[in-house]
Amino acid sequence: LSEFDERGRSMRDRWQTIIDDATKRLGGVDDNRCRVTVTDRFGGRGHDYQVMDTEANDRGGMLVIATSVPDEREWTQWKGRTARQDRPGQFAVVLNKQSPVFTDPAREHILSRLKRAPSEDAKVEVLLEVADDGIGAKLKEFESQQATGEKLNELTEKYYCKYPRAFEEPWPNEKYLETDLRLRALLHDFADQPADVIRAAAMDELGIALS
Image 1 (cartoon, helix red, strand yellow):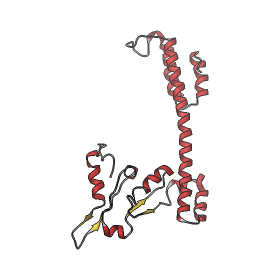
Image 2 (cartoon, rainbow, N blue to C red; image 1 turned 120 degrees about the vertical axis):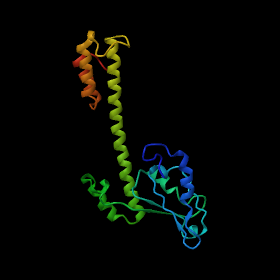
Image 3 (cartoon, helix red, strand yellow; image 1 turned 135 degrees about the horizontal axis):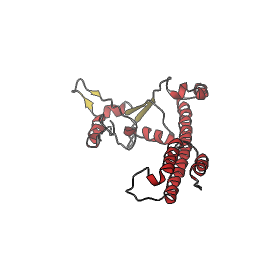
């Protein structure tokens, strides 16, 4: 089950069929067997897998096997795919010891915490903490990128106010060739720089004061 096929085309018209078939048996009366549905994060959110099979429910219900531990919000969604509508359900986690969360030198303490964890649920809680910490770092990185983008946008707007030209005129403009080229270089070279560095460069290179 995937949002898109291997060519990048939406599988919207097949989603419900795959979801409905996921909990149906294969084979005949004497050789029937249950299906295994492989999916990514897309299949772990918002889809209703209906397990109507009495024998399957008597044996614990639908089993969801996760091969990674996401952030806590996504984790709740994944677990919510099983044990729906008062039916039983099962959940298991199978992780690769070679995955980055275990091999990153900066996270050596994770393995020791996992070994000390008193239960399997406690181990999951440790991994959820790691995932949530990662989200915090990504948000901080995004905030920095956003501040950089806003400063470069401000620079561009003020530059064209200072060096106006018609929309259809070529770029670089012959009239402002030297400063146009400076602007191009600044936008390229400072795309990953913090706002205060861009502010200083805008004044030094183009004489433009940024907020």
